[in-house]
Amino acid sequence: MRLIDSHAHLDDRAFDRDRAAVIARLHADHIGVVTVGSSLASSREAVRLAGRHRLVWATVGVHPHGAADVTEEALRELERLAKEPRVVAIGEIGLDYYRDLSPRDVQRRVFAEQLALAGRVGLPVAIHNRESTDDLVRILRKAGAAHRGVIHSFLGDFELGETFLDLGFHLGVGGPLTYPANQALREAIRRVPLERVLLETDCPYLTPVPHRGQRNEPAYVEIVAAEIARIRDVPVDVVQRTTTENALRLFGLAAT
Picture 1: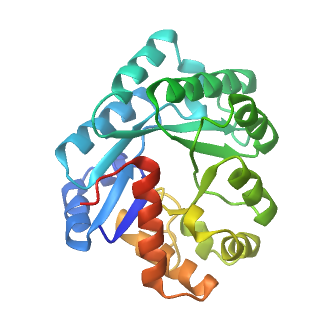
Picture 2: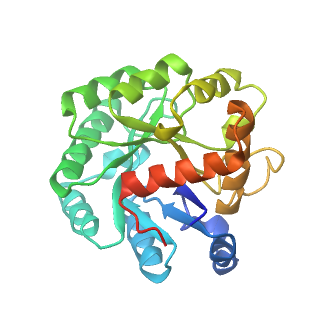
């Protein structure tokens, strides 16, 4: 694989009309994809897609928006799904205090429960954080050093990046890196170790410039790699190779 999109939503209905063509482009471009569960239904679909396509792997988990719907039975099903052979992480899990679609106390409880699940099955985690950093960091510190994974769609400054790096996490970087307003993010990505950075698209969302406003897709991970190379003043093949090795190592992927 030349590149890995470490966070995509290939099950999203935005791909319903041409999902097969999007996945075909992965093979043509030698791009691997981790397609991410955000509910029980999308976790099941992520597992199904990963089982059918050689360059697709899956995560399973419930996004904080849906935390209020998580029951004991749901957690048991997630644990069963997590043991499927092409599941490589628990996610997308975390906290979201921007939309508050689930009560915050419930979000915190379900986040901790899914971290515990990840520990039981021995998988890394893909973490969502929106306007919830203090509680998120507190819960991660309480969970302990056994947890590893990626802070999805990292949008912070260098100091926040260091906080997550010190906790043992990678930083997932996508289309927002190309947005003019995000200078603090660009400075952070210029300074953090490249060995702790993963490329992602979060497709169909967060499309990079110059395609902003259109549907995002895994092929656009190339644009993110090129922007990191520009920011760090290194050849793009160095970014591609290093971030691919990072994803292979973190998720335990086969170097297809």
